[in-house]
Length: 201
Ligand code: TYD
Image (cartoon, rainbow, N blue to C red):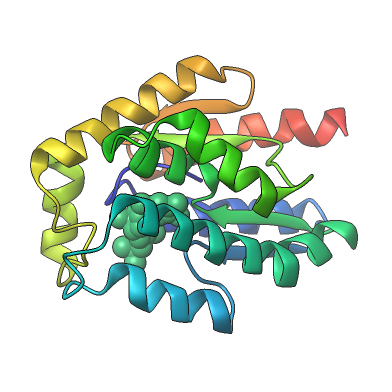
């Protein structure tokens, strides 16, 4: 599940988990960056709002490191055991935030991440598409902002735009859903797509 900050990913993930379980799947949810001891420790460094001097390359590599550990320890073993994995953010976040919004380039960021991901690319990615202004104002209402959320509105606009261009580049894998729709409508669209995938497996 991908989308700008404040796009409602966690709500949808919980609903899709319920649906997959009704369909008899063993489901695990992971979140990035994080999801295990080492990746959570890396998360603390990445999102610490005192570390304003962090270089974009360091940031990219820390996200890739957190991802590598999550795949080695959690995602890989779960997929190998036949479980369904729903991830709150994955490599597309790096392609968009570090590759596009930070300007490192999508291809460079993908090359680095290929080492972390190996064969575990998602079957489908849902992009909860939302104007940057709406996402950030939702976040501000919820909690204190982290280092990434404190970035300028211009940065978050690049993120929202970046996601759209990534979805255009990978139309088979990335399904875009309008995140301004009511929660149950969004869930209905995602469920229909997941149902198609289940019937094709
Ligand atoms: P997020 O899921 O938004 O955490 P929370 O729900 O607690 O706010 O993710 C943290 C931030 O990290 C978010 O601003 C997006 C950013 N991010 C990247 O820049 N690159 C990445 O590869 C990932 C996974 C996240």
